[in-house]
Length: 308
Image (cartoon, rainbow, N blue to C red; front, side):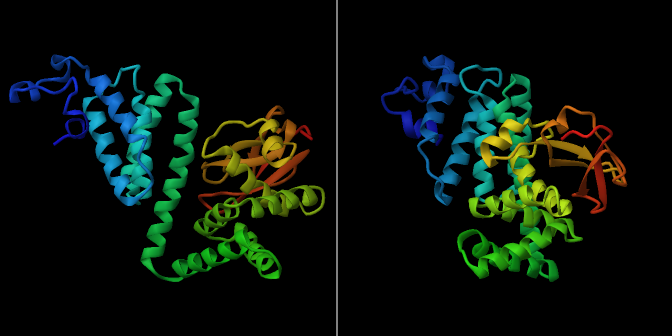
């Protein structure tokens, strides 16, 4: 039995004394499919985040998508796909979540919904990393052991204080330059996970920008990734100033070696206004070192005119 019949069958516009009317299209029963979908979605919003409610939510959202006119203005189809993706994510069905996010992004772009588009980019990257992390942890081996060590360090660095927390933070920060891209991204995710470690990164960025620039650039990349939320847009200084108290912009740049687009690179405030490009050395008026997320080789974002 459908959720619509379970929830609204008795005394609703969909109710009929005859089985024939019960199986007729919604439009024939005095209520449109879009209105049915809207009512079901209102019921869906009352669900909580639990395994049982996640499974129930997926079933309701699937039923909604089956009755929804995808050109409707009453209920945004992209939002329905997005919500189902989040339920799949909580159940760790990452492939289904990514598939729904692709559909949600398509509708967001068609309808000019920039907020939904941004959320799709953010969670696409997050879910891909979660999927990769789950595959690594289930495969065993040295990398799985390393990830377990990093999770233990996360508990100490993010939620404690004192010398043990400082040592855990230092170990995770060192992993931002690890030769393995999976380890680097995992370290970045962990350090961006709490306000405690984020504020430590802000301090490093401020203190080292004019002294130990490599260290500042590593910290800035974590901060920039969190602001970029998986998107490739140029981000003006007001966002970093509002969240971190930093006067910096955030930009994407492709790797000079493999062409992969690296996101979330923290740059001077005028960095997005002055033309920039990439090269394999730092010979320029100003440069930022970047370790490519794909090929793990270092390249430089450079400006011929100093953007500071």
